[in-house]
Each structure stands twice: as structure tokens, then as C-alpha cells.
Length: 249
Image (cartoon, rainbow, N blue to C red; front, side, top):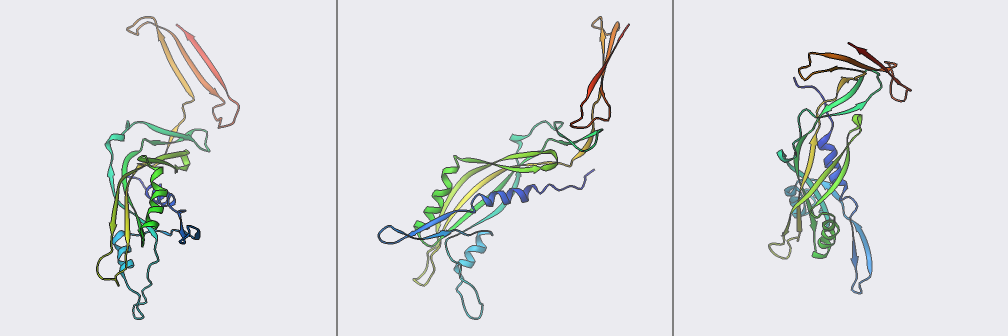
């Protein structure tokens, strides 16, 4: 039976992906090669066609359309696909202590999925676009690992692998001289996610019991051994000991 839970996996991953490209700067130089302006490239979550339409739109008094200033960057999520190559045993569990003395938080192994993301770089001249691209590509050979706090209750920090799959280039300069130019770089990424299930309570093993036999058929029992945590209501940080009991036959 399905349970209600939400770990914000996709939301955290998309935010972490965008933050990677949130501090890119470009320099504008004069004829002597001196830097006269440094610009921080704005970043937004937006589909490619929506941004192209805004770039091509001309401002008028009637529509009050504001012309988009370039360079800019945008990114979007395209699809989510299951990744069988990263599948692990379904009975594997993650566990962490909680504030009780009789249970621990537990969670089964996550399901691996790939999140397809695209980053778009819009520039009105070649040098602006090349400066932005060159600040990104050296970090991907072809992947880059980014850590996110996936499940705080279990202290699970997921190392999210981001793979650069493809780089596309498109010059939108068409038509007459009144048409605005837009150079578009498209970087396609695969973000490898792990979707974790609900957190449940699992009892803590505080007593272990074993039997020892004198023959392979295990019909001649010679001794039993039992060990118990003392005290039984101990929690993290308490001083504990073990009580052992041997019984001979």
C-alpha cells in the first residue's frame, strides 16, 4: 500500500543544478584590451522556445514588451528515466537512530533514475558566448559530482553525478539588418538521481540468542548463549554493558 511522503528529490536536484551556473561573469573590453565592464550573467528557469520568443519580440508602446538584455542563461528539466544499471538489492536498508530507545529510522535502498536537463546560453556576440562556455566546460570530464542533503532524517547526503552529454550551437541571426541576433549554446546534461522511499520505524535488536551443537545434524545441543544490552532502555550516549548467559546441557 502506498504511503504519503515527500523528500523534494527533484526540487533539490534542480535547485542544485541551477546554483552551479549562478555566478558566471564576463568581461567587456575596449580596443586596447582593457576591461571596461564586468557583467554577471543572469540565470533563470525557462524553456528554450519561451526565451527565444522573448528575444525576438520587439518592444512597442501598445504591448509594453521589454526587450531581453543579452547575455543570459536559462535551464529546464526535460524528462525522467529509470536507470537499471545502478540498481542495487531491494532488501538493502539505510538506518539511523532517533529519539526513542526501542526503534530506529529505516528506509529501503533508493530507486535510480536519470534526470535530463538542458542549459541554454544566449548571447548577442561570439565573445560573450565563448567566455561563458569556457567557464563551464573544464569542470566536466565529462561528469561532475554534486552533493545534496537528500534525507536529513537519516543523515543521507547523496553524491549526485552530473554528466555533460552534448554541446549544441545555433546562430539565430536571420533576415534583414533590423532582425536582432541571438547566439544560442545548448548544453545537455544527465543528472543521476536516487529516489528514496518512506521512512519507517524498525525495532532495535537488544538480545541475541544462539545454540551450539555437537554434531552436523544439530540434534545434540551442548550449550546455549544469550547476550543482552543492559539497561534495555538505553539510548544514544548512555553508558551500557552486556549481560551474558551460558547454559550447558
